[in-house]
Amino acid sequence: MSAILLIAIPLLAAFLSILSKKLAPFILIVVSVVNVILLFLVPEGIVIIGGFSFPYGINLLFDTYSKLALILVNTLFLIVVVLNISEFKKFSTVLLVSLAGLNGLLLTGDLFNLFVFLEIAGISAYLITTSNKKPLATFNYLVIGAVGSSLYLFGLIILYSMFGTLNLMDMINQIQTTDVAYSNLILPFFLMIVGLGVEAKILPFNAWVKGILKHSNTLSGPMIASVYAATMTLVFGRLINNLFMLEGKLLTVVVVILVAGIFIGEAMAYSSSKAREILLFSSISQASIAILLFVNGIVLWAVYLIIANALSKAVLFLVINKATKETNDDDVNALQGLFSKNILVGIVFTIASLSVLGLPLFVGFIIKLNFLTELVVADKLIIVAIILVSSIIEGVYFVKLLVKLWFKGDNEINVNYSLSYKLVFIIIASLMIVFGTYTSPLHSLDNGIDTVQSEIEVIYNG
Image (cartoon, rainbow, N blue to C red):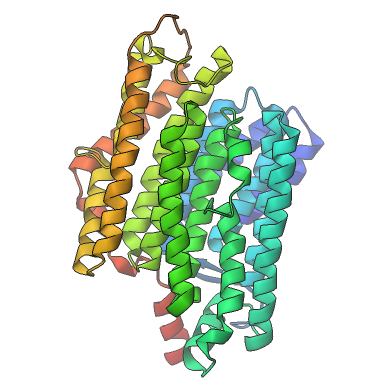
């Protein structure tokens, strides 16, 4: 059994689903479930496809890092699909292609195939966002996404001309063992960072985000803000931690961009009166923090932060987008009192919000405490101050949002959340509480979670 099945099965199923529109939703759900199960059966290791010896041919890297990422992405994908399949049946084939593309992004050990899967996942995302019925926003996303992937490809072409390889580990090894000047790497690295930054929602390369998420629904919202965002941030993080090896002026530029993204995202969320905009701007800030942790080599807690935020944002967008659909308004004032008749949903929404804020008893607190501790030990006090200040701003607007949603306004809000929604919410909220109080599993891994460097050592030095 091979990790290639995680890509091949959804892709084959996508072609089969075209033959029968009635069976397509059933095929989508079955494949989504099968993929989650396979993740616990497939052995870790490097999978070489096509019979070529390493580093030639196509290879997949299925290690602890990619396994954690795939469990998160495939599980969230399954949740979003199950909750929305009855309403968005016509997107079944697109979602199957999307699943293949997302899994490919997390598995590929080849930088050109990363571009291919980026295109596959991107095209699927454009089609998913058509469900918003805002064609101009989707068109903007398509154009900006195309520019981003092109910049990534241009950067990759420059690196290929320098090192003659597209294999991730082979390229890293050549960069580390040859005398190439770092100044010659700045341009291709920067082009690739900008290209990936578009999909990872990093300011100022994310002009598409507002148009997509502020009009999102229960499918496109959690799919783009949670599933896609987590995938791209994890891919970005792996490359930053292994390939780009940031230093000097490039490091300064990237850190400045990320810090600006943190504060601008928080400021825009604070100033907005639209619930979906508050969540999307908060997501931008959180993505910048996660990548800033990768830049500083804090891999384990960056991965945990992405996992916690993806779970939280899935809940937050599902709750708000469901309410917006039934009230035709996502203004915070229009949604005032939403939880007065949806107490269970309100409790779960509050837990997810408090976890994002990093308050005690929830997993977000444990994660924030640990990465702040590592930053202090590494004498990165300025970064600690930046994150703490941003947390205060975030706390203010989330508390204001919670107060509005809990306390009744002049108009009565009636939104019906089905049993399946409530069951998913309870499971996710329970995980946030369990891992916020029982932290041993979080410490079971160390910063060796990303094994690319150790694999390189074994392959090239025995």
